[in-house]
Length: 169
Image 1 (tube, rainbow, N blue to C red):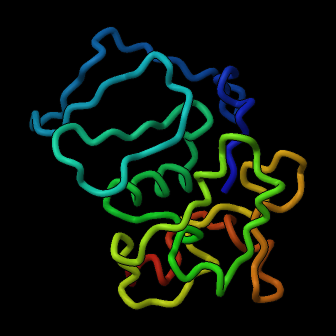
Image 2: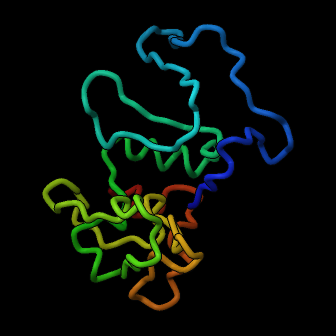
């Protein structure tokens, strides 16, 4: 999965229609009044807090994020899933090419302590919707992530829905 940063200032879907916020009320409520959300005028990034944080659960789905796989990815963060490539055991499965990562984006490749990331005892998942693609945040078009197991570098980050292991977890 990859989001083109250049999509942000150009709010167009692939079918050519322009996306715009026609809502006058910036804070809306669902029918039952339980789940409020706000429309942010910046509306330019894709992110979510990981897990339930208490209070307002912040999920941002900017213009370049309005694709099924990205929405599912961010919702998975909101229910507690970290990036697969952040697992404590990731070095057994992938190599991070630090020299190829954009300045300021290296934190996207930090490992998460095993005590914070519950993998449910499942093996590393190259097909996870929570895995970045091989050139994510590349400063030079080269790979930022390469798989140890041959033949999977082109697989990572290509999920369009939950993998079997995502479902098990």
